Structures are given as C-alpha cells and as structure tokens.
Length: 323
Ligand SMILES: [Cu+2]
Image (cartoon, rainbow, N blue to C red; front, side, top):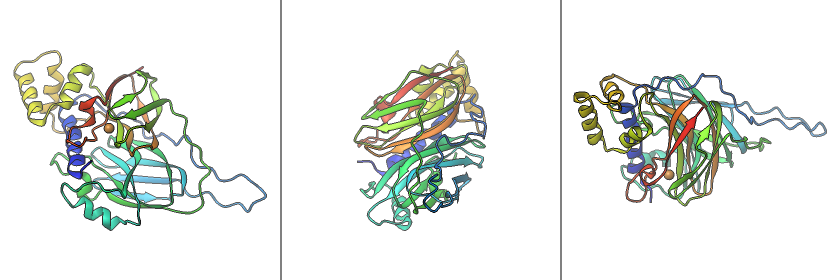
C-alpha cells in the first residue's frame, strides 16, 4: 500500500536531483501547444454550442490558478510554470463523493494510507521554471484535486505550501481524440517498456499503466559531462551518501565527480527535470508533451512500493537517448 509519507519521500528524491544535476538549463521554450485540443462538434443540424474555453493551469510559488472549464472526455490541459522553482501538475480524482476538504485532511495526516477514493489521473511531471507543457487524460465528470509533490530546498513539499487546487469536471462531453504518442511508454510492476531513442524536439509522451501499482514516467536530463551510470547511481543514493560522494568529489576531482561537485557548491542549480507523465493509477493511461533536446535522459518512477523503496530502485529507470 502506498502511503503519503512515502509519496513525500519521493519528493525528497526529486530534491536530491537539485543537488547533483548541475548543468541543465531550460529544457523548453514556452510555446508548446496541445496536439489534440478538444474540438467543438461540427454538426450543422444540431444547435451549435460554443467550445469550452481551453483549460490552462498556472503554477506559481506556491499556488495553482485555473483558467477555463474542464469537461468530461479526452481533456488537454496546458500547464504553465510561472514560478521560480520546478513545479508539477498532478491530477487526482476524488471518488465516492469525497471533496477537497477530505483531500486536505488526508494531506495533513503524516503517514496516512492513500485510500480507495483517490485515483491518479496523470499530469505534467516536473516542469522547469518558466517552461510549459500540456497533459491529456480521459476524465469523468466529478471532483479533482491538483497537487505538486515537489519539495523546496527547505524540504517542505509544495502541496504543504499551498499547491493544492480544486478542479470540477462537468458539462457536455468533449469530442477530442487521444493524442498520437511520439514516445510510447508502458509501465508494469516494476519496469518500463519503451524505446531506447527519441527524436529531439517536441515529444508527446504516452504512459499506459499495465501494473497494479501507480506509476509515473519522469524525464531527467543527465548533465553534460556526466555519464548516465554516474548520474543514476547518484540519483538513487540516500541523501547522506550523496553528500559524502559530493564531498569526496570536491577533494578528489574525477571525470564524473567534477559536475557533481560544481552542482553541490551552486546555490540553486537547475534540476534537469524535463517533463514527463504524472502518476497514473492501475489500468490508466495519460499523455504529456515536453520539449526534448539532444542528450541522455533518465526516465524514472519514484513512486514507492509497500516497503517504501522507490520503483526506480526496483528497475523503473531507463536510459533514453535523444538525438
Ligand atoms: Cu512506478
């Protein structure tokens, strides 16, 4: 069973990347557009109804602002990060008549088990400051919560600082179709099935969850000058070990240690997070767009198993070469 404390631990892992990924830089130009925006019905016989305003959600330090209306069906949401920190948009549906208040109580309970009435519907995984992305998912009418699990340097997750939003999905079902993926990823417990290469440029990532647990597919660009092996080893190291490794690299520079040492001394280095698809519950599918530049990426899932071990350490960490 997944517990909230472990989801938060996941966010801690995300924060570790802040300390080791030194040479990232902005991954995306803020100009991506939805590939499959819901279109208004074109039938002329029926009374035409204005298409709902496309949904845009803006993340700041530390809040979500929602503009537009979410309707049932295939829904594409533009997510803009207008903050100074990395942010994500994780979409969560509340079943069994639960409300935002129930979700807030749950989030305020350390170590609370994630109940049956919470379902993960995908999202736009960590987007760098100033960048934007889109997420697409098939939504049913009902109540949803927007969350950001990323941590600030002070180790507090962003949802605890105010990044908890509400979204009501209602109205006439959209006639949109699912996007065509340029990077199709399938998740099981605990592995990714995905191509080893992708083309640089705008990518539409699909994540289909064939497992029993929830999974996400986050992309982190390996800093230039660092090997994938060194990067992923550091990514999975506990915080203390990471600090020790960074200290060792400082006193004894090596080919792979130098970037980490440089990152460790930087005030707020770019994390290298490059988008991806937020967590999807068992049996679900979701999409997200991101801008990929040439280089090496680690595709990861940090959702923890029943023992608190992140899926990345159990095999959900794949190398992706972008060229
Ligand atoms: Cu996973």
